[in-house]
Length: 147
View (spheres, rainbow, N blue to C red):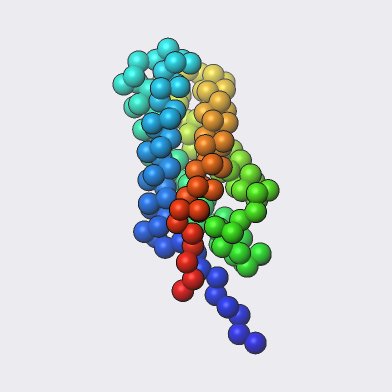
């Protein structure tokens, strides 16, 4: 019996997915960060751009590994992911991103570690909700195609 290969997103698709996610996040979250923190526009955009760059690298790795594990265990492509697993994916990505993003907040702001962690958690909650909606919409727009 020959096992059928389940396709993953190409590197080009993964890069498009990640770049559009980060660009959309900047457009949505920068004004919110300015409003909540009272920070200047340039400071908010600079912080979010730095966080975006760091988390973008992490997200590409995380999403690729998550998709590969899903293919191996469930024999299912990302665009066919059920709701509960989409929630787990979004929460796990954002929660794990704290490890790489909290130090950036400390370095770029006057916040201490606990304040930076609180800010990071708030940003994580916003991005987790955005991530769920974004990845669902991206999968509808650009579903994974077979070989």
